[in-house]
Image 1 (tube, helix red, strand yellow):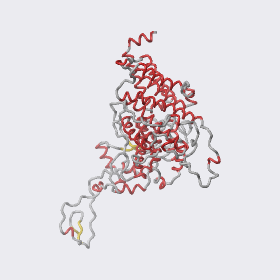
Image 2 (cartoon, one colour):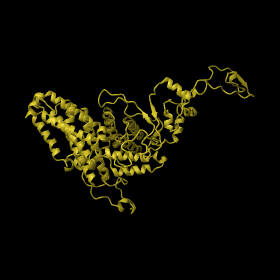
Image 3 (spheres, helix red, strand yellow):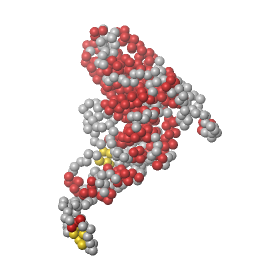
Image 4 (cartoon, rainbow, N blue to C red):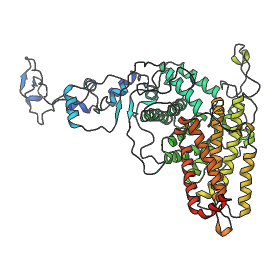
Length: 584
């Protein structure tokens, strides 16, 4: 699959580079049975009263209300003078038309050509009344580049500016779905295979390095299997898998370079709405799987990046309950002892992703953490390659009745050790896991209760020692200096290093700036400013070397904003002390 470095992908995609597959024609029958309210525009209303002669079998009413004898053919009904404002296709099908310009909703869902009469266009232009929801038709013809379009019929959704940073004002999941469309309706808006490949490659390039919770070989196997199915078989597929695919498309879209950022946001919102609809069809509130949890984690990050942090907090509460219900917070050796080595490792990775998301979102929002009960140990995620290179085709390790000599594992046995990037991912996951455990207990809980972080100078000193010990014991590959050459050669590792440094120095800044006067705990102004500088430096490096990523990750931006506020507050509050400190 393509990556950002592939020559086939241009640096930027235009608005014309957007087009999903047409929805299946089988859905036309569903939309044909919708409300027929437009019928009143095509037939004159019946008379308010009817005489006895009108009801006799020997006569039929004419257009002018006079009965015709049975032996004479009825006169043709006179066409009404009132022009119809609905599109020609809806008039022909006698379906409700929302009269959206340039294409109505019904034609978009049918993937049919939407045309309006000249009179209807003149009336609509004279009225100038905007529709609450309009869609834009994109050309499905190939562009000059070799990259095919990513989406068509992009919904127009005008964003209302929010007065509070991180609190979106719109509903997080735009609804484009009907009550009875089911999974077939979601399948109908899948991108073409080549489009999906681009978005999946972008996801694993931009998102997976910092949140490596998806087992790539198993994902690829499921992905290939799904796309090899016929349309009818796709409609019978696991809807949770489809939800995971769509949210991967949505996250990948957020990192695609396009000249129109609003256009990109609309495409991504369309995909995440499809992901949410697929999860709804799967019954994600009562039926849980690792795919469901993974999709919900990614939906949460999408909501944060889309300026819906408050919605992400609420949706994260459902995610946490489901993770608890699935037993992800429990040691896999105790809760699922007969599971495969791959599944046990995946459960640990997914729990770390849930814990990490919950912890650092609560740091920013100053709300209580919820991932507080667990007996999964960090060191249980070992560097053993057990099951790591399995594609998950035999998830319970049940012996095969007849071994297949042509099986890929027999022809080309998997590596006996982790690949370099897999080993780096394990180191990163364990490091962030330890940091989350430390932050949750000592920073999240006190801040959510508006309490000082420490109650004595000794307690503050011991806590700082714990943080610095974590930093001193970083894996050697995560302690390197970040330069332009290093990022170019090790982009995945550079992203992991920057995310750790941003989170770590931000939390150390909060600890050093903490004060508790009744207990003799003072603010370390110089130390807090230095930690704030290092945290902001992480964001500056991300912006300088990976600008697209820096423009997408809301959590990174919000931390940098808060660090700048802390810096100003510390300088203004301790001007005399700072003058003496820096003069020395």
